[in-house]
Length: 332
Image (tube, helix red, strand yellow):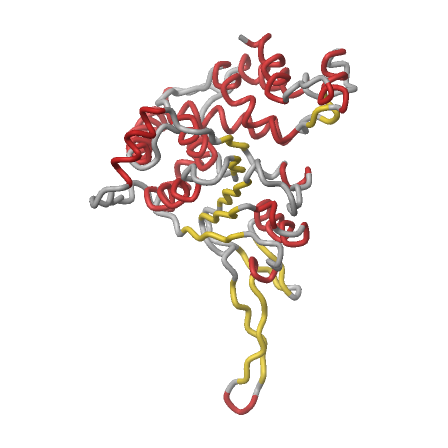
């Protein structure tokens, strides 16, 4: 178990300061995005963990507005790409052009694509071809791209928030498992309740425009991300993470129910994602260490896109959320 020592008083103070600033970000986001408390929390967890998020929701639920708002509040350079079937990899990462200089000398110059930003929104990512989807893969995992044998680093910090429409799947290309695993969390966005939608009507159809001011800078965010990794995690929480992730893997002695319901389960990256996410959730709440409750709360967004139901389970009407709920019940 990692523990705080007497010499770590400054770390405690930094955690408390970061928690206060995150509370301001959270409150400012609530003033723009109505009725999506869980979504706001999970997006902040993703950013503090240094990861990427997959946003699943029907059109009109403020996914684009959410990314724009967080980009402003966190002081990040944000860009958006609308993924379409004719989008090419060069449209994302950039390309080389031949230029003629003084004296007729010709040379290639690399023109950077929209991936060279700190906060990228990949809108409806499953509408582009697999070749184009994979253009993001290297950047998401390795934080650089290679064009004509030359490495080009993306800015830091670098986060990708990709969206998918769960309804219209005709003409789409489902993301491969390797790319899904690159997303720290899958965040499902549902309809707001009546009270939130009523507030939204008045806030978005009037003359007054809500103005946002940065709370963080990019350097502040990276410092907080490093701080998240220093938050201590107790053995009980580590055991809960390992027990949960390993219980979701079929064919490993996890149990007959797992073998029956799950076709393939989460790999070690799921454990790493949970370890970071529970720390980030603790910091956002102003706590000095995560608890098992954090593991339970984050189990579904971490695991949902990293496992698949078997044919038998789908035929019986089982949902992946039901399986995850069953796996977390022993932890409660």
